[in-house]
Length: 209
Image (cartoon, rainbow, N blue to C red; front, side, top):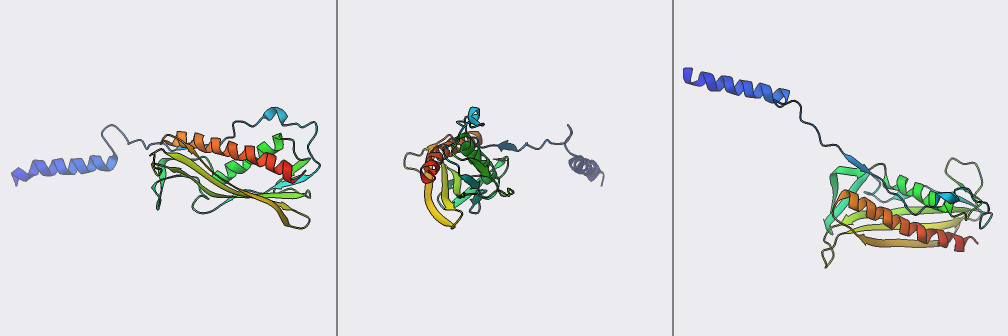
């Protein structure tokens, strides 16, 4: 029994220390990093328009998303049939919330419409802009050249409110090469959203002139 006494004391002590954390204090959890999506080409100097292209009022509906892209997870894939998310990186809020905000800013600063309204507005609108996020992910090595890409797909339609008729629709489906990291991915998605906005505004101007 004397031979077991010291090892037994050592085992009990070790288990007690393990229950209280390490000898140097509690282990710090790795913080989660949050990333935003920004259209860097928005011209805020045009936030007050001296005149507008037309007298129409545009209702900008909140962008919706197909699952699983209706979350704040940052998705990537290195297999066409498998979708993963970064463990310690995420979008600051849902992708659709950030994109809706940036789209609305871009349209407002383009001085195209007399006014823009949202879901809580009581004003009557001439047109409704609706969009759906079909996909946003980082594709790692899926292409023949092994390059990684940010891939953004958005479907958009414009509806005339007085007769609820769709007067135009288009699909944005583009990729941009990127390094494999959350911040590089966020920068590439922001660049793709800027390209989407730069196509959206002229399209709206043409459809509502």
